[in-house]
Image (cartoon, rainbow, N blue to C red; front, side, top):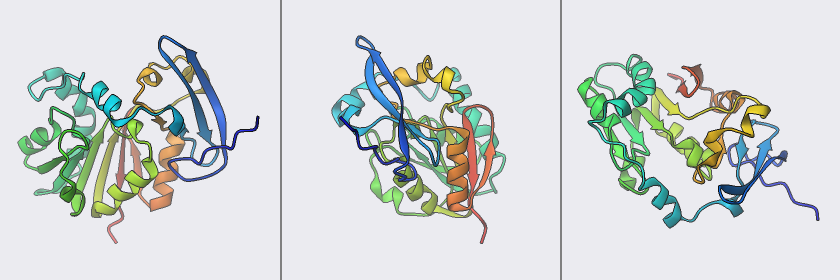
Length: 222
């Protein structure tokens, strides 16, 4: 039986192909597809968890603002981003989770940062104002429509504004088959370097790779 290739959820291309099938019944069973245009690897909607099951996974996270290890982890995106901000910059932590921490770290550095999370801080009015920076850690891999969400966030940035993203990046085909990152059932979008290069070109953003899991994108000033 022929299968109609699903559209890429990042760039909406129909040029996608089946990339990998996970068949470990006690762990995870699902298909992965890859986009020929932007190199995103994604899980089709038929394998996505519903909202209740997804939140149940997130509720297991134990990330607290006074956890030095968690702060060090977030520092991988916090440090390079805050070094590029102008005094008085105001931003948003998109997907702050049940233990918002980055907003506190930015406040300690002299920057205001609001929180937003679909499940834990659902304040939709905060997605209707401009920001000097937006940071999102370990979020984009959970998005069923990453192209739509990232377009929305980029649209909220002021000219010259920064988008800081943290997510593990896909490296090689050989590594993917045994990649621990795929075993989380809420991880459904996997970005490669070329995925971010496509995003940068699509929105004319300056792109910086800061280590294996941090990307900074800057909106043009004019």
